[in-house]
Length: 262
Image (cartoon, rainbow, N blue to C red; front, side, top):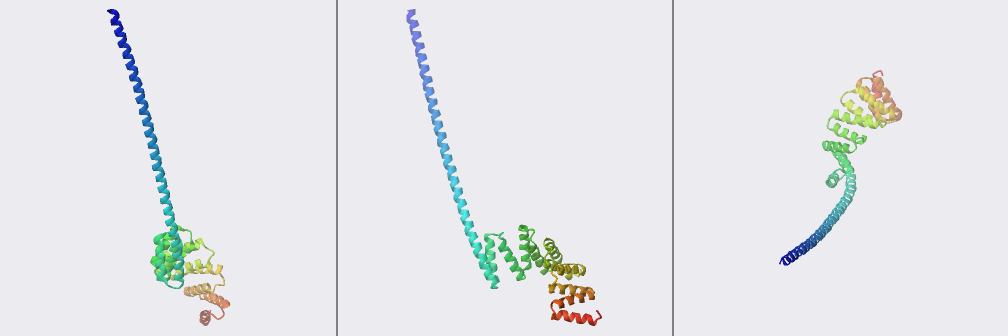
């Protein structure tokens, strides 16, 4: 009886061991399958992400190409409009030329050539405040351009903003001191505001740079006459006559000053 009982216990123990082993094997198999499923999902997810990323890259490239093509079209239009505007302005069709330049700036607001042309057109048509605004903008792009300061000075001068004109003209002369016209511009402002000593200084500098320029000599002579230094005035009127013997204005001034005893 005891023997049978022991055999039964042993049999049950064996069955328990076998069941446990079977369970462990099935568990391992399940875990392996789950691991494989996870790997497969990760792989599919990676492929999907790569596909999305590739699509994004392709989309970005397409957008970039589209933008470049648009910019190329705009540049072609800008170039064409500027050439047409130049032709119209040369023929004195100012209103049509202005419209084209404004159209260019709607495509490329910082286009230097179009802005410069439009500013000059405004100066020509006495729209000086508009010219002033454009030149101030252009000087942000080229802050060391003496021509821009000169044109800005003219826009100020035409509006009787003499202090601003003097500042702009003076800076142009500082940037480009070897050009006589820069000093003439400064001298003219000083002459208008009755600062004759400074006017004479700048007119003399212009004459020194360009001694055969009759207009510069005449302005210097006029300034000496205005100041009351008539002997110097006569000397410079005679210099004008030396270069242009039939200059009527200088002949008249010399005769008048001679009659006065100078």
